Length: 196
Image (cartoon, rainbow, N blue to C red; front, side, top):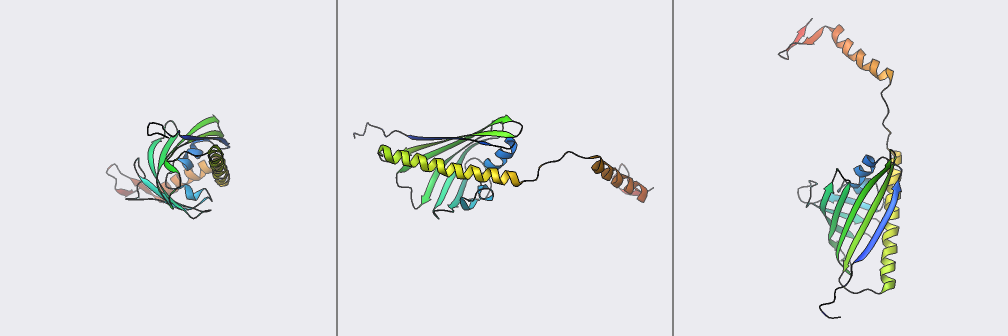
């Protein structure tokens, strides 16, 4: 291979559907340092440096299956369009053939309680891999994402569902207000408590 020839990127597209509102799915995916709370595939995950999640921050995590540790950098988090982009920084031990890995996750609402997940992993290898190794890598990626998003679905299924306020909750709120009034207290315009 001459220096002019370029090794083509490996693309691993992945799509699935989560039975939950897009905001709930985004709450999991966009929590860049918090994935360990919803997927069993991670032992732990933290945001490095000052611990603040922002574009440019680095997250570090450990795989629950291999024990390997990884660092990834947040490149983009678009809360309006539900897009998350991040790339690899390092791994221990080093990934054998990966020069660079870019992950893009995008969500699409399919209804009130259904969300499509569009995931694309773009890997720039540092060596030319045989086709069978590329296919094995793609299958491993698909299996990893299958497990991860099944975990997300389970996590979201266990979250308490918001309920509409009932007549009883309104009455309890009104009762609290009347209770204060009957106790004989009010606030003046200056903010001081005065006895009625």
